[in-house]
Amino acid sequence: MQIIPVIDVLKGQVVLAQGGQRADYPLLTSVLTQSTEPTAVIADLLAFHRFKTVYIADLDSIEGAPLDHQFYQQLAQQFPDLQIWLDAGIRKAQQLKKLPPADNVRWVAGSETLPCVYAAAEMDDWILSLDFRHGQLLGDQRWLMDEAVWPLQVIVMDLDAVGQSMGPGYSRLKPLIEKHPQQKWIASGGIRSHHDLKQLSTMGISVVLLASALHKGHITAKDLVGLEANNA
Image 1 (tube, one colour):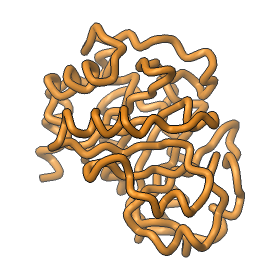
Image 2 (cartoon, rainbow, N blue to C red; image 1 turned 180 degrees about the horizontal axis):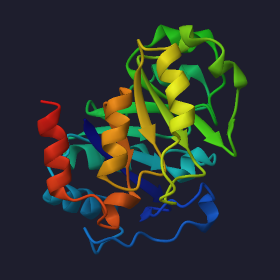
Image 3 (cartoon, rainbow, N blue to C red; image 1 turned 90 degrees about the horizontal axis):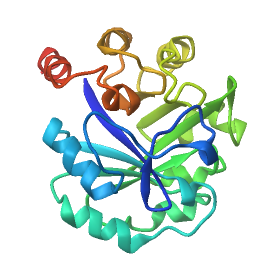
Image 4 (cartoon, helix red, strand yellow; image 1 turned 135 degrees about the vertical axis):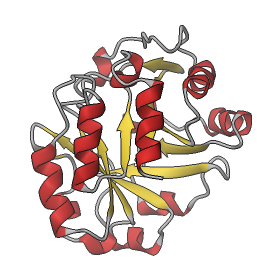
């Protein structure tokens, strides 16, 4: 299983996502870092564990502000061996055709902002996030009806559970995995401990996005090494 740490950036600082209410997100407090500056937070995460990928949600762009391409170019250059998955609030399929800020950056597009259009099917090097709140898909409901436009990797993002340590959405993941086994499903939201990670692994989830459980110390470096070793 691959664990990808999540970094939520708001006004240039790293915040701790809690339940999807972005305006109320506090600055990050963590057992892994004393900083809220993205570069320092990434460096401290990599000192904790040799992550190969990080996920960054640019909350300003998701809410409609222009993306600071230069910032992400510089960030990617500082960590050239790290792949960055970037959710920048993409609203048009044409934006997926534009090159990301750097070669080691991949676009993530959420159902919350991107309408379901067949133009998206023309591109395969991006990641779809199916964003759920209060049990309902945010955005265009057609995303759940036509997997022909999905890329290979699809995130199931439970925004209500983010930062809440309430457990991942097993009941939502299970039917999606069973109906679409060809997809590479990625779980996000509510993960409490390595026990949740083991259960997700038995369901067929090989990639998990994680933030609070890492920053609160609920999942240790030893846990991460063990998960990687079991899936080697």
